[in-house]
Image (cartoon, rainbow, N blue to C red):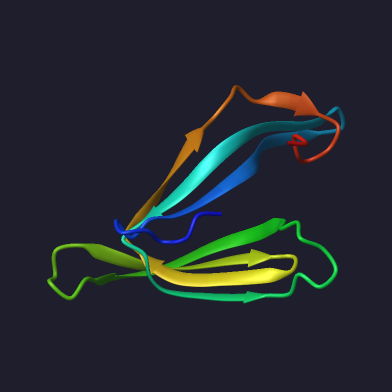
Amino acid sequence: MSFPDEEWRLGFDIDYIFESSEAGFVVAPCHLQFANVHSLKIDADFAMDMLIFISEIRRSGPEKSPNGEVDMWDFEIECDNATFTFTASGYQMTVGKSPRLSETFDIGR
């Protein structure tokens, strides 16, 4: 995870599951980056484990930015031991390597 920087970007390095079947999971490392982030709130409990598994990403809105030029969305990323809420103008996901078949839902970095 990279916290908002001077360009207001919030990033997550994730193992994205493209497909699942009885044979396993088709997984690839990806970078998920949100733009124009503000109002970031994190509720996390890492007492038992430092790993984070995203279970759902929800988006609601949009509402116009204060200058009326950009649509702003409210995001909630629900994880097994954390919740991230924030407002952003959008996101982009970049695939790092070609997806591959794995017996588990992560690629073991």
